[in-house]
Length: 131
Image 1 (cartoon, rainbow, N blue to C red):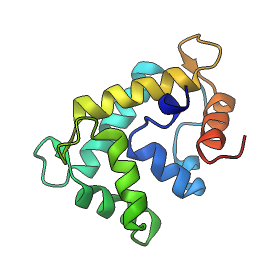
Image 2 (cartoon, rainbow, N blue to C red):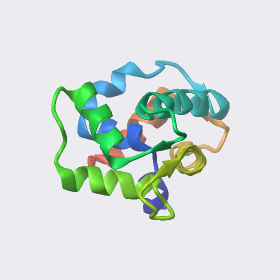
Image 3 (cartoon, helix red, strand yellow):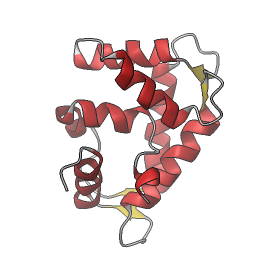
Image 4 (cartoon, rainbow, N blue to C red):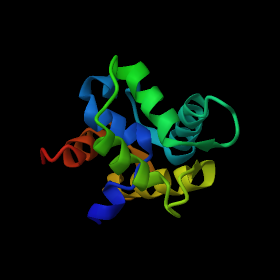
């Protein structure tokens, strides 16, 4: 279960690194298709050269742009390993979607197919180690 919680895309990790960014997401309940659509948008934003993959460099640049500074390299490495599931140095949209689907399922504690603001908040707190 813990691995699923941490199997989010870079957005999830980014939110853990900068909790204030969590407020940028939707404020009401979110269905899986809506959740995945937003994650696809963010993946596209990270894929700055539009080649269909996100590299560590693109991830670092995305986080730095959002946070105002580059995160430590070891944090980027840890984040990247969560989405680059085959370890080839490139995170594909398919890898990211699978990770986000698993993350959604882990946060959807009542298994109704909808994430409430409370479930998202609890998921973020769990990720940040503040249960």
